[in-house]
Length: 69
Image (tube, rainbow, N blue to C red; front, top):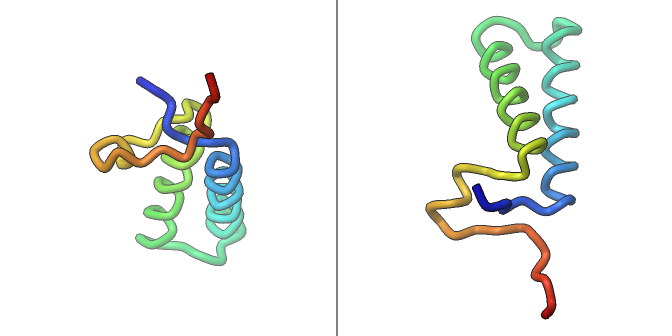
């Protein structure tokens, strides 16, 4: 897997995942919506750690900075 996520994208995803987790575990959001947000938070954390977003690949999107040679 080639990395396609820059550091800003990774940080934003991690912050959003943390917000979703807090909303779920404090009971602010519950039920089906809560579970969906919790699963989405898990996906965001996973993609942040591996620096690869599977949805970016088919569209050729990359938020990684371009290296100068």
